[in-house]
Length: 287
Image (cartoon, rainbow, N blue to C red; front, side, top):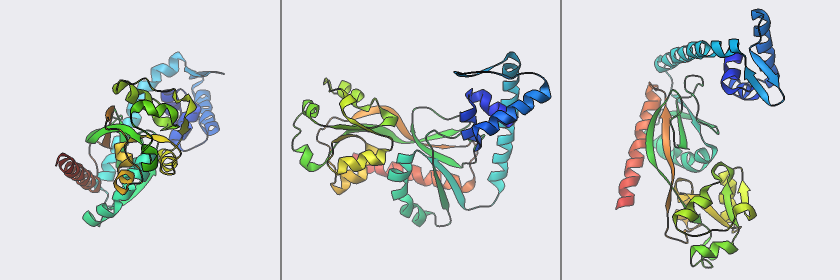
């Protein structure tokens, strides 16, 4: 039943398998077993993917409600279970470049807390996945979660000081290799449009599946990276990278802490600490 419900939500055995931590073949086998027991097909299978049958479509809302209720019951158990570990889901770039550098300060402030960090590409559904909180650059709240905004996502080009000497105006970027992360393919166009400059095509640039790799390439002088302030702040502070232009643009995303409606006590403490740090940084920026 879990396999069917997940496959029905995603209309994909592969995505359901990722969610459940099994193989697509295992999901398919479980669904076939359920169909055999029912004596009725739940999916129409074809080369382009899956489509629910009428019977399958009618059953999905009831199944989803039931599993959401089970997930909430498990959350309630996690709230009352005494533990010091906080399970955190984060975008890989956030986990590596934003959260990891803050762990020493977090340990000093909350020595009893033991963070366990897991890199995910998408925010988790707390009704289905055993995480206590999540940290993502996002524009929407994930299902079954509360959201706490830390800061807006601000983007601007960054490069080495040596490369910056060659850049007098944004139009000079036409002669440079532009770097970006595949998660945010529209960043360069957004920035060029916002500053009123017709930019070069990014097709001639270099894309990276991990922002940390793009950041390292920029630090090595390979090109100009579209920087996200929350991810490049340490490189800017150290002088490894500089912002050659003053124009900074809001991406439409924000750095958010996501949590279940009732997070465990340790997770709630961490959220309070993160919000206090964000407020402190905001005051320092204004000063």
